[in-house]
Image (tube, rainbow, N blue to C red):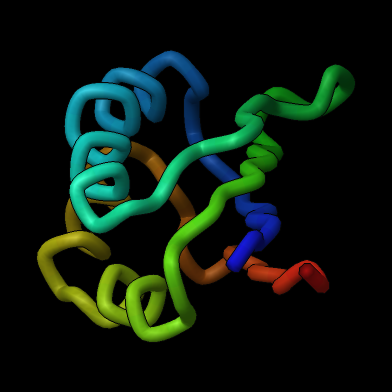
Length: 89
């Protein structure tokens, strides 16, 4: 299942420090992958991710985890701005 994430962040470098060292290994451990990541050219606080996980339950496990949500917040993600779009196969 491929999905697209849009969200506001405080600082891309701060986000990447957490994402690359902590989140990506967790995502890969459950069979997922990050296909594309970056911020908008004109708005470096607007993060875009394209990711893949085996199924929706896997994604819901991450999003429903209080620890994962706290880690995202600590990395500067404004979680209330997150929009997830599921892409057709």
